[in-house]
Image (cartoon, rainbow, N blue to C red; front, side, top):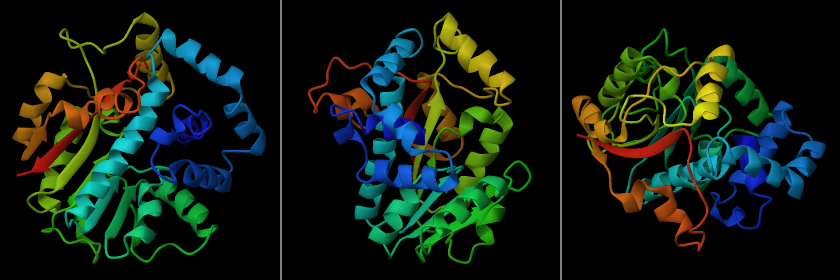
Length: 290
């Protein structure tokens, strides 16, 4: 996803839609871990590359890359809004190479930022960030295999985390790789680990009225067969109309306001980009802990 941010940042129409500083931070981090070279940036910014991506998207998910960029903006905007309202804890589950906490920690020194990820991923990120300077003192990278250790147990070991405090929790592009039992266990652990009024920002895979992934034949092969062969099969999805009940069962109240969660309405319409498609495998959602 970080390479997609770098590509969008080189397109004048889309660059203003990205979170402030996200492209620069992503490129620095990718370069530090060896996943981005100067020649790659030249390709990402080439007009022919943008046309190629658009052509591929027309046969799969139109506007998929833009949707990923807008999701990052959505997570950034929602987190900032919660911090402006007084929230003082941010947790990102399965952050990978996402830069939100790293970018916001120096800007909000009074806020505790925590990332929980697999030990191998976290070790790579810790080394890369350390190579670019000292970590902000309010940024904490916790290593844990959540398939073996419950999230609330991981957080209980962190002296800086207050289990009863209102928090912002981000789970982006993670739930689709968990089986249904693990999704439920994670949400229950989050309910135990955060205070009333906490905001949960998540993404979910869409399916249709028949319970199948909302995609054409080519996209279904890419997302189902292709990911399975890559060792990352899709294990959990849900219909948008059923998400509210599912979240309520786990102690969260879903906010389905279109002006808040509809990326096209929230970002593209005000930017005058009404004709731009934005459709991806996942859709964003916001829920509040009861």
